[in-house]
Image (cartoon, rainbow, N blue to C red; front, side, top):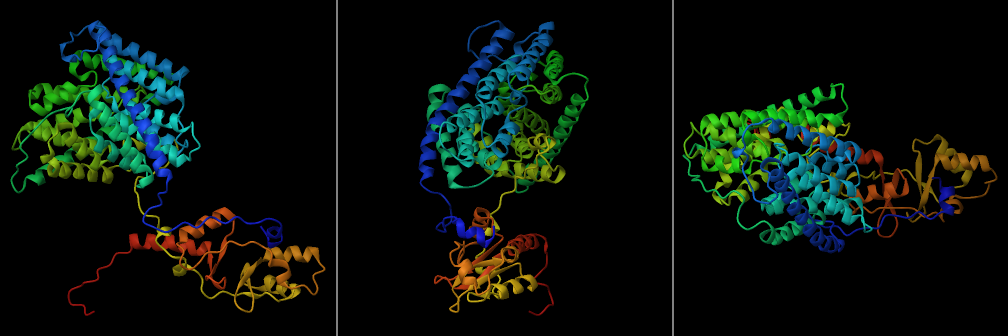
Length: 594
């Protein structure tokens, strides 16, 4: 926009905000109040999902129309064990094809996509079809957990509720994640882990605006849980974590093994997905093929079917034998990988706990202490390495078992698994799917460098200016021959009047008839965005975006020009940040005098 345009249109500058540690405002209280409703909704969805899974499981496998929890170990191998998962996969394929394709998969990648790409908007279809499809999938023997579906369903409830109000995409995201955290809290009784999962995996930020409403929703779910699910930890367990002085090194070593196991499972999963992609069949039929693999696996080891919470309890309490754990580990891994890669509906958290726990239990046979102790470490390490959420995995394991003495061993194992997977794989099992759809995301958070730097630190201090009383012909000559594209126009006192550019000079030349006119007559009425030396650069960026200006004058409190901020100066901040990451040198070198 030229100065001539600016005379006829007032430029709206971005409002200045008070600087502080956080950017929270009173809307935070409104979001927290909304989170109370969303938390109750997410809890109700979790209760409904668990009841649907139990009802479907009992009806399909035991011929009972009740809500009593039964173990799959009592099943007798039969042709129905193969037919049921195939029929369940067929129904899910039809629901995805003619209902909503969003119900395919384990839910967390879809939730991430909705947050980062879809403006945190989910459809009512997802809220209805996701729990139904998951109940069918798990109820017919699918080796999945309920956490992925409830994260998707709870998130859909939060998103739908938010869409009734005038909220920004960031505020909708907060309520979406609040619903997901409430659902996870209700099922597992892990409010702190649910909030940590939100921070490490779903929110993509660390702000009071998002953290507090999510925490409110988790607390609400905790309050409702005793009435709907009962009290106490889901897997009560207590092991003696007393280790020799070198024991934490063993915990870290187990974490490395879990990281390698996680990397192998991730690679196998996406290799199988590629194999399904090459099939000459519509993807609607793939879940039925996955169900065939599930049924065949069930003939070998019935306990590999379904959620498998009873298996987790037995691994922790040691009520297993080596041969049974080896078979369970192999069968569960195989049918889970095939079924998940086929695009059916179900979660990954419970299977990861079983696979990591089985590995830890087996290794624990040759390590000091209770095998259940090592099984728990394997569960947490597998979760932390695969989902790239080490803090979540530590607290999740503690809240699941109620044993807070395990913190140090769990941290050693989870951190080691996390380090292993981030070094081996560029993407996690959750983000690889998103990357294959052409989307790039990063899960490294940092403070915006533009919020740390003041305008005075990067602005151009020595600025060539034009006098306000300069004639238009003389100004045109300078603009055409000068090295700058834009010149500030100042009065004799140094007060800024406006900006003129080469585009202005070209317009004046076309107009003609400017003899005797000065710059004051052409620019003094133009509204102009400015920043001050004490402003953070982020405010200048907001002004540039709001006004379309590539250069912003810097003035003191009296309106006198003291500098100029350009896009090049902003790029230098990024360059300095990259330099700080890459430049390496030692400051204390033996023998060198300071």
